[in-house]
Length: 308
Image 1 (spheres, rainbow, N blue to C red):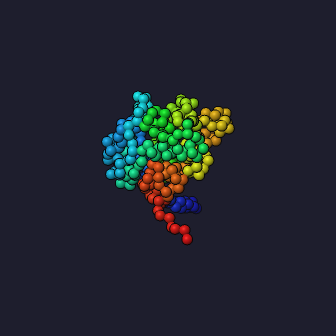
Image 2 (cartoon, helix red, strand yellow; image 1 turned 135 degrees about the vertical axis):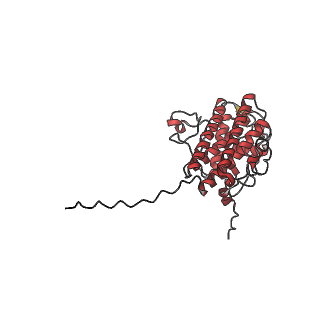
Image 3 (cartoon, rainbow, N blue to C red; image 1 turned 90 degrees about the horizontal axis):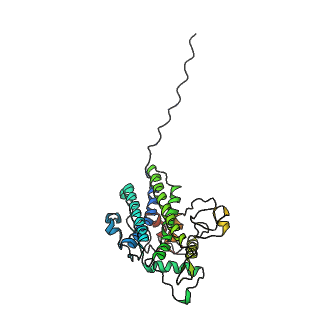
């Protein structure tokens, strides 16, 4: 008797789709982050050198308009090095994004890094918290005036960039997109940690004429960001109530994190609400007087239909 025939071979599975480096959604999210890297680079480079990308590496601006209001800061030798390194690192990040996205990357948006914008931001933080200026005088915050003011201004930017990248890391799917976002995110987290550490060293110093300590002013800035992005969990200043500290055992807050000491993200809409200083992603202002560049920012900037 002949043996039974062998079973038929299993059906061939279709080959997996070829790997994708960047999906269209990946490009949009990375371009949103690129807006913030432009802001970082221009602020830190101007503070360190008195000029920005147009002299450091003009082609990275991709013919975007020059920033408004930046100038060299009066910094100690140590702090000037910090500004140089952060500015040049941000330049490298812009170069990396352009190299990876090529023609799909955005050009530099119009940026306002003038004293007036920073003064408005800090004034808004103080007014929101009903904090009075010593002697009842007018507030004038100049981030280019000294080390402490520079660090307060620096506190504003990299953390927002980090929030953006953390959100993107959970959403990008392309192989190269994930590598790019994770590489940017690691250094961005380090930059934020350096700034917070330097502020931590002077956290009890009182800033004049603001009638607040450095630690208090960081908390006021964080509170303003909460107000603008309409949440109460995205960041905190250098000092918190003990029940908000790590494992509810410390009131120092060297690194901002959630209840599990993990990093916190912000959605694209929340990021734009903060950077525009308006609490509305469709109304530009502050650092981006004409709005950020790219598809995501453009969606929010589309004219609203009038209410009937």
